[in-house]
Picture 1: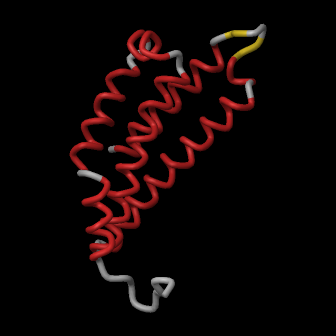
Picture 2: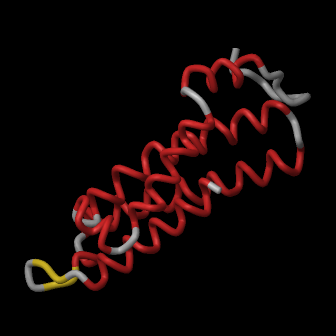
Length: 133
């Protein structure tokens, strides 16, 4: 759900950036905004694939990795899309606030980052994997 909501929030923000003209050109042409949006898109897609991996393998470690990454994605996406999209007025006018509230709720439901990190550290590595030591 985090991956889907994140992708929807990104798509909505991208559409806004394409239509909003500032400085005589669409905001989507500004390289700084394009870079920020691409980083968000990578996080959303990585979340989707980590969740798929967790569902496929069912291992505690894959589930912990997916949960931790989804929590981080939700925590990152919400303030970014609201700020990039013109703050609260855009978020409310275009319905962005609904997805933002849901992402925040999911982030809280997944748990605190330190607890997720403990679960990840406690889960065994897959056979043949190295922990870097």
